[in-house]
Length: 379
Image (spheres, rainbow, N blue to C red):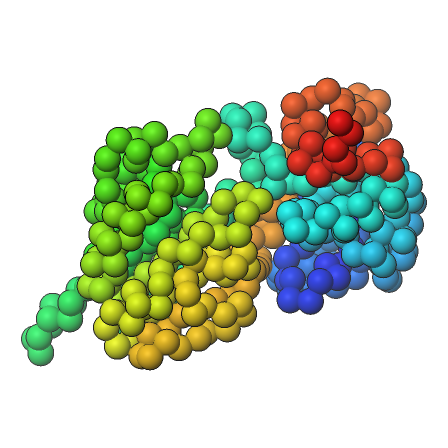
């Protein structure tokens, strides 16, 4: 069995899909592991460490991907990479398929079995495979670090002989994995933290981290969560009431961090330009949803925009800003899933296509798009 780890082909992607630790695990499962030279450089992993773990270093993508049975990637394979893969190869990555249906069809046409790690079900068995959580956790942390770097004052309250420096006020919108980590990180830095979310279960989580919960807690709010644990889209009436409450709250904040995403849909707009204008000069807004259209009016993908005297941070690929940590967690997510596809005694690939994890994540197989969210309507 050959397992391939190519360098990421997408510009600006510093993460890598395997680490020396996970290479050792794959070797123990019976894989011959090929790692393209320089694949881990931007994640602080040198080629010699892969070699010491048992991998063979390859000169380029062609040599890496040739005859590979399993390919691990951070991003969806490009057309050039697909052309180098053999039919039937298993490709495991974050596929980002929504809005990229043509690319999904191209993977089917190439004959690969493509698995989208972001579709991993949120069940106990799959917690160690949850790439959305591992990467969002780091994004929430980095959002606070980025905000603190742009905020030209101290974060904690400081009592000195010369006077007292007040603590920064930080408001986190969305208390999922990224939001909760942002709350925890801001609290560690000494800020006064508040947060909001439309899911009632989030209130207890927010308060357990020492932050104040801000929301209109009516009957609609009490039913605002899907069975899968995601936020439901709220009615226009609720949104109006919540917006009024949030607008008044934002005007008093120094830093606002938005994290709201709805799977398969553009990011909801949470902060209007009027809300931004109400903030004090020198305030900072971080839009973690900028790659999906953004939660903040005026945010610009890949840039730090200014709206009056307020900075709006729109960094792309925020987990990639701390690539060494992000790669370490992502690689562990992948090896945990990949080993479920292997017969450990026979040291052979043995995919159980009826496994709930496989059924939830497989996008393409045998030349067809098979995931129900993307498969052609046959009615």
